[in-house]
Length: 452
Image 1: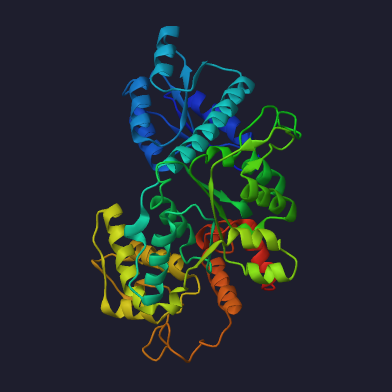
Image 2 (image 1 turned 120 degrees about the horizontal axis):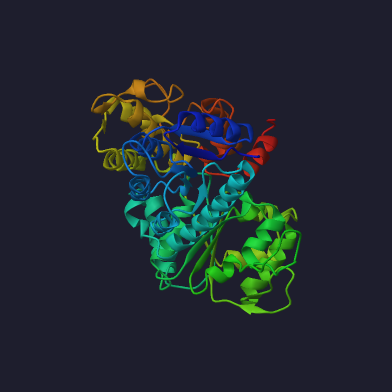
């Protein structure tokens, strides 16, 4: 298995519990076991397993009560009841209360694994549906789009002016400057605000899968296409589709995107029927599309079609007066979630202000949240901040000349990537999540910067 599926086994029979856990572990699953209902509920809330195998008869509380507790905790697990006792009526009642399926006890391991795989398939479908449903009416992120600098205010004013139009918008800016939030704000302030907002992370998918996701496919269009599937352009009907990291798509996909932008029509992969949609297109990239166009790496006609209106987000080092506002905003947001107020001390704030933030707003967000976690008292102090931040008053402030002010953007990006990789112990998946990019994009950047 490419990734270990997490299973929580709740059963009071120690022998059965141990044997089944060992068998499942040998088949590549990550199994945690509990002998009582209360213990099982606590583990489910803490670990959020993908699958729960739940005995109906437990020594402390009834299995149906455990099922109810797991559902109320909203951990997202699919529950399979293990029916050592009870009737078919009880099994039906468990499914009515939200269990995915039930199996007799003992159950052949091959049959149990089939039920587990089916439960995982349903979990995947439910997750996809949840993502799409959340995209129908995204909240207006204006309160989190923080900044009073002149450069940032110009961006906010431009967003407000163009939001009401149906024009395509290309959002430009370095990694971590808030391009996704700008796109959400454009949608939330538009007449399409009550219609879907669909995000497509273009760099996260192989090109064949990307085309299938965007445009859908017909049954038999390729190996494994056992049913027809609508594309995300259809899902976004009447609303907005946001093509993040648009600079990563290949020419074949670029041609199809240009056709949608020009004619509002497309065909499913493997299909012949013309499908018409009413969708506003927003796109974003941290790459220099103008340079890519000049070098023949991005279609010129698509570039000009996407950038009917261009919005460029300034890097954080060019609006240093916004750093304290953003830091306080992130600290307050963390306090609301954790229920513990922690303010940023004057010396710590000075260190934040004097850092150049190659990772921009996203780097500042992770720095403040990490400091809030490691800080035991009510005030975040300099020692709670990463050692890589400027330590003394002689260090150049963000926006000040001197120090590394003449370092290229490429070098700043390379340094930040190296720092994040060091923090994650070289784990590229975790580093990509912190950087807000796909692993594929991280590999490309490492290659471009001469890394391995």
